[in-house]
Image 1 (cartoon, rainbow, N blue to C red):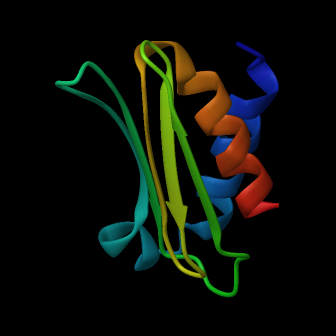
Image 2: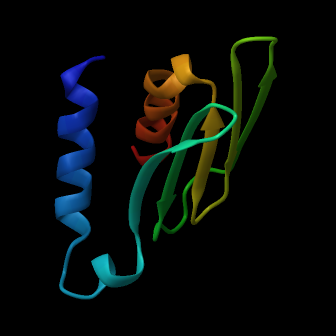
Length: 91
């Protein structure tokens, strides 16, 4: 996985932290029992909504991003792809 996405997310998070924001919003990357990944970003405003649904036998990806929140779920091999979508949504 490209280290640039981690630097981007680190910088994005640091830019949001103001003593209040980080108590209610943030970024959550965790596993789910399908098995797979969950990526949630909250606390944004005015972002471009995006919906993606790729349903394969082994590889799958579901993204539902509103103006305020990004919710992505995917198979074990799709974390890097999901993080690219997060970066595009935040940029």
